[in-house]
Image (cartoon, rainbow, N blue to C red; front, top):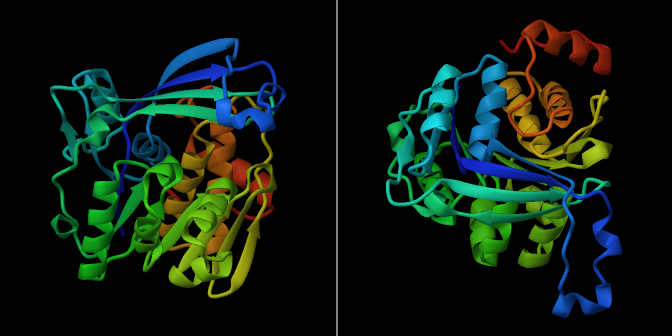
Length: 314
């Protein structure tokens, strides 16, 4: 099985707010919101959904293909991806604009407020699903909606499987577009906030959404994740975090672990546990691509967390 990662390549500006957003946002004044947060820390890191998932998959010994647009400031990031041993053939450089940028502020309870500048990400990519082998799964993670809709349509027409991972693209999708992307997906993966947004926007129930896909996965932060397939629910606990520093990128690392398991032909419980283990490493570093581990270290951590031998993933 091969994997194509579509979505964003971005530069993250990660900021820490040493307080609670809830103490500064008045519910009865949301309609005239005016707030300012005094940031304690700011760091610039490599990011973007496609880049983050690719990074953790590379750590797990996998070689996904990235299909995404980047800007005229992407040279160092491009070299970095090459050094991971990954192909850059699917990355299209837009010479007249800069790479997408995310401005992420996290409070002391891991609530986040993000502003995102699309930049080069707004440019549609030229690849097609037909360019890749029949056993290729496209991962439609947060990017421009035109690519997401086209790749979903092409996948369905060719009888290919795809994973819909909408993330922060949801606010830009119309209700009918969300339904189109969900309907027929191999996997829908969202966090609990994103699931609630989908239900609100589409007027569907959680059960109805689950019926539209083969597998639905909901990540629940500190409560782990939930995998639903054919009405059967599998609860996946978190892998214990040794030193929590920054939750940014934990979801992308989870997806990488999950996808690595799928590529290895593992069952969904093992896939979810691999996801939880990969996510724990991301949380322990400041930034989305700063964690690292050897296959032996990863296997040992998996075994300690879940009291079973780690499946072969590399």
